[in-house]
Amino acid sequence: MSCVLFNEYPTQDGKKIVEISLNAERSLNALTLEMIDLIQPKLDACKNDDSVAAVILDSAGEKAFCAGGDVVNLYKSMTGGGDPAFPEDFFTREYTLDYTIHTYPKPIICWGSGIVMGGGMGLMNGCSHRIVTETSHMAMPEVTIGLYPDVGGSWFLNHMPGRTGLFLGLTGNPMYAADALFLGLADRFVAAELRQSMVERLQAESWSGCAHASVNRVLRDLEEESRPQFKAESPIQQHYDFIQKITDQDSVEEIVEALLAVESEDKWILRSQKAIKHGSPLAINLIAQQLEVTKHMSLKEVFCAEMILSVQSCKHREFPEGVRALLVDKDGKPEWTFKTLADVDQAKVAEFFVSPWETNPLIDL
Image: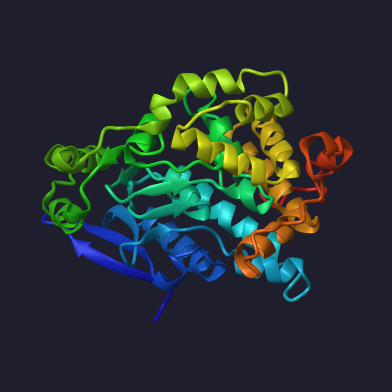
């Protein structure tokens, strides 16, 4: 069976809703190159098809929308067991798809239920209508594998309130429905049980006017009906002042030092401390610098910058070592290039930001 399923739902006024479903439930719908190469042409075709009113982007199963990217094949290519050109091919096509979604002229409704991490965050955050449910569990935990939050993370982390994006990039702390709404990562909360009802109401809606308004009418009503299931508690919003205080430092070393110096029984703070203590010191530097250099970039410039950093990360040992320790051997004991933040060679950090090409593969986005 195909790793991406396509369905069409006719509307009452002669249009159709196209559903694109990631279909790799066993791998928590991790985004592969095969998936990308199926979704891209479908979106391109729908863009110019006047009969298509809107697109739904969702997934098989209830555990995850998409738990990340194709780290398995990236690891193989980085360690000599696969095509050495794979990282450049993968990131070029993945970021092109993400950019397509961000700039799409028709409504794309993302059903972001269950786990949404890494590559899944890239897909979801470009959509015009991003739905979270009571099971949504989002994160950008790349620091734990020696990488940085890519797939447009440089864009959406920098657009979060205050310095919450920097803090979440450095710690990989999880985000739930109320967090996502507060941070601007989601637009609506809809109870998971109303998924089929959403499709049926979109079919019954009138599409003669503004398509985005039609979607809004449906989702507004669904959100109102979902109020009993919504948990308004947002740990990130509750810790907003704490985050601002911790990140109000003159260097990333001082941010980490300030966080680790806090004595607390607060589980959310303890989780932040544990993640940054075990994360890659090199990656911590990459994350802070990437968010700084992309702060005022356009969306296209952000993806071009990420293209450089991602491909360079695949040429260095930190990322494959993080994948090995967490996902392959699963010993949880990565041998990071630098043991502490104080050890990090800034000349080595600078290497990651040097383009390996004269012309960036994404220059024509």
